[in-house]
Image (cartoon, rainbow, N blue to C red; front, top):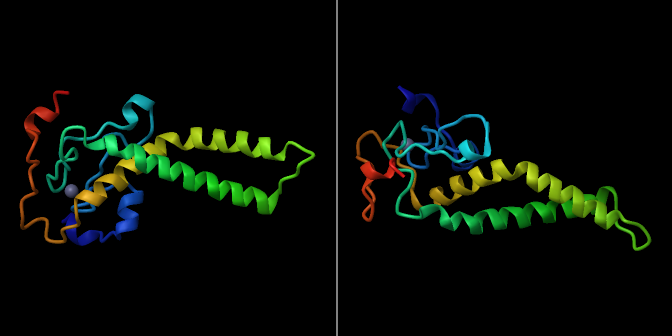
Length: 151
Ligand SMILES: [Zn+2]
């Protein structure tokens, strides 16, 4: 049975985009980031424990704040790393080079950052249930799960 085979920590379940309730099921339908369109496709419910992936209508609008925070954090890290490794000077374009490199990096990481944002976001609303097999998943109050797939 899957429940006994893996015990993921909060961090590893978030980073690998797992369902926050059982930490087993995958949050995203496609394993590889084949296309930008398919990148964010999610199953209606967790395939392992039945946890709905969209708790309420427009649930993932809030991920904008998460991805913004991630982007800022990442930019600060590259800025510090650049400062230590390469440095900045008033007489040259090193600051511009950092700006460009950072923008390219953020662009390349965008598909991953978008997934990570959703994974972090849902982990704040759905808590881990080690005995998920014994209880049913909470069904969303303001949403019909059966209709969610038709969007
Ligand atoms: Zn699950």
